[in-house]
Amino acid sequence: MNHFQTFYNMKTGVVDLSARTAEVTPLDRERLPTCFGGAVVNRTLLKEYGDALVFGTGALTGSFAPASSLLVATFKSPLFDHVCHVPFMLRTGPDMKFSGLDFLVIKGAAPELSVLYVNQGIVNVIPSEHLRHLSVSDAVTALKRESLPVRSAILTGTAADRKIPHAAASVGVTGSLDKAGLASRMAAKNLKGIVFAGMGGLPFRKDHPDIGKALIQRISSGKHGKTGGFVSVLKGLDGGKEASKPLRGLTIKNMACYHCPSPCMSYVKFARHEPSLLLLDHEGWIALSRKVGEHVFPVYRSCLQGGLDPAGVAQRMPEGGGITEWLLDPEKMLPEAGKDRISMAPPEASDVAVKHHALFGGGIPPILPGDLWEKRVGLAMILGVCPLFLLRFPEITDMDLLRFISQDEVALSTLEENLTSLINAVAANG
Image (cartoon, rainbow, N blue to C red; front, side, top):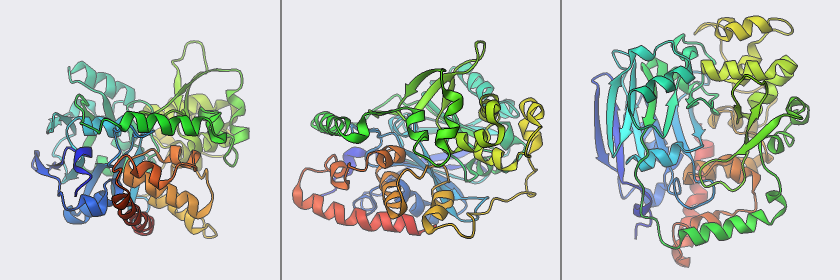
């Protein structure tokens, strides 16, 4: 019995940007029972299609499982020179699935700057040269003016247009955890972004809401369920307590991803005449605050506007001075393409640190130590649940999540055994 079909549209979009064509092919039904979805299927599709970008959802993406927000991008990183998986949270995963696709393969390079628009199981390649050299926020505004229903969008900014190594793909105007060069790969394909209409849904089992509520109630009453927000995660990381000091006394509103009961992001108002700033990149914030101190707010905002990885920016910023120049045009302060390269990790780094900085995109903070971090992130990347959520709530077991897929004990045992081997494979295939 294939337990996975009700969790998917059973559709894969395949886009050839060179030919400006897009087709939708059936998702292989025989693949799901052994691959589950997410990063595992992404990797398989990447092997099939070669030099491509692959975006994929997990079985639980968009479901009633807590924090079922995940979309995974898989590609050969131009920074690390091997395959990386980068997580996208907020609503990106559900909105792709509710737009009618489970996986999206993007090959070739467009003859002109383009945007992919996904709606009702159809992918359109839209020429978008007018978006070149626009900031991320201006690109979002321009797309909305074109009367396209937009629930989620993954976009590049002016940093990618200028082929700057530390360019990062952004979820709308919020940034992301892309620290592996996805934006650079998109720019090489002349792809400005992917827009999801997110207007549909899937017929999940009727008992899913009750299973989800029971699991949320259990973790909310535990020791890890009492706190939330950006600062609560920040303080548990190396350098996080010092980096949280600029946030004291500011108006903060916590923010969570799709179906997440415990927010790890926060909106902050740092100046009277400035719009609120959504903080979601914990390690990027720590890196910037170490380098620029009290100037962290405007520099972080400049990174979001230009589509830059804050941690990469901090790595290249000179010690002391130069703040004014950064605020005027931070991209000009960075090396051009081909003149800079990020080492995968320091020579003395552990295997887990290498995987943290390379295999999984470098943006998922080390909330848990050692192999436990690796297994939790691998679990998230396969099933389609936010990896930060699973790291923050280690009491959630593999079986807790698998019960959303099946209630049959024999089937669950088989699923658990298969999942364990897949987690090990994902963690080893960098």
